[in-house]
Length: 542
Image (tube, rainbow, N blue to C red):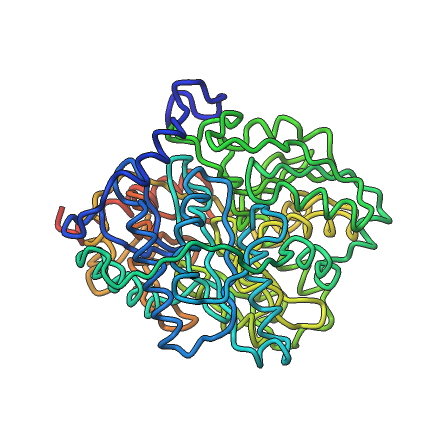
């Protein structure tokens, strides 16, 4: 933990936006250098222009690769494109548009030149493809330009195919390989043209108007609860006011500032500026206002993550809120299939397992990455999909798909619906779950890791774990593949009856993550964490 974690950023913490954008155009990547290649993690290619990992050549090549991929897949409809508030997002969108227009791709940008949240782009793709008349013109797909909650110096570039969610590894591997091939070839084969005019689409209007089919606004309005929403300087900044006006809510946008330096933020755990609404350090200034609202929320830069603050509990642990959201939804959505499953990533809390069992619902446990929930959300066989990192989405009232990417705005609005319908805050409802099922202690620890260390950790499997006990209890499972769909988890998970840990490399930052949970209290959790490190070190031979 950095000594200044949770304190306001100072001038020395801020990026030089002009230098960052200049480096985007001036620095040229060398594809023979691993750190300068196009690499898609769990949510697209990310990097910084200052380290020659997110520059104009990366976006030229990656966009051309996406054009070729969609052509090979027979995708002939429009491509929706949107960007968040990071400093590198606007130049990257300009670069991408040059390539898309140069390849004669029909492309739709925001009608009001506004920022576009990730869920609004997913919603646009699905809305087009679910309309038979539109679909007859060709399936749509999209590009969202965002590094999500990453620091201000970072950029991100993500492809969403016609299902509206994050592209799977087959698609991203092909796109990355082709992009690197284009960079190595001096960008020969990249077509560009000045976009004199492109079509527009009202992302905000379409998304906000359709929210009535997934959130009970009448209950929220009737309750009169006070809602505060902080976009944390991100892409949802104009969406919250539009939601307030459309549905007549007592809702205050507590921070309408957009600053690519994020000078108004408090520092995260490691002393960096990071727009993570699930971090008590990054959300410190928001939490300080908790007493002024019945529900106070935060979103990250592309609004695919949520943070829920209550006057009685402060910032909720994302796992706690997911468990409450699941119990509420599966008790208040009669239009969902009776066999609709509860989707969770295998590093999410086991409290969700116990809630699922009490509801008589099937638990569908998948690896980290929201892409795994896409098929179930599309066909309605999964009612809710959520990640411990504060990302989730769920079905409409009628059991049909809403978004197939994470929707932080939706989950924030759900917190208001929960408060309005039950008369209790989500943190009060979590306390009731604790009384029924026990009080798990959960923590994720991040630590620096280089590429070689991350690769070694990603190759671990259950057979490489020699231990038979974890913190005094027999090990009941050593997993390298997710129980829900059998997919490799890119690490390991070790379980006992009352505790577990999972170790995996980050797909977006140079860190590795050890997740651990115990239903036997904080002291036992510390034992689990200590033994987890020893077990992993032994398996890695270090």
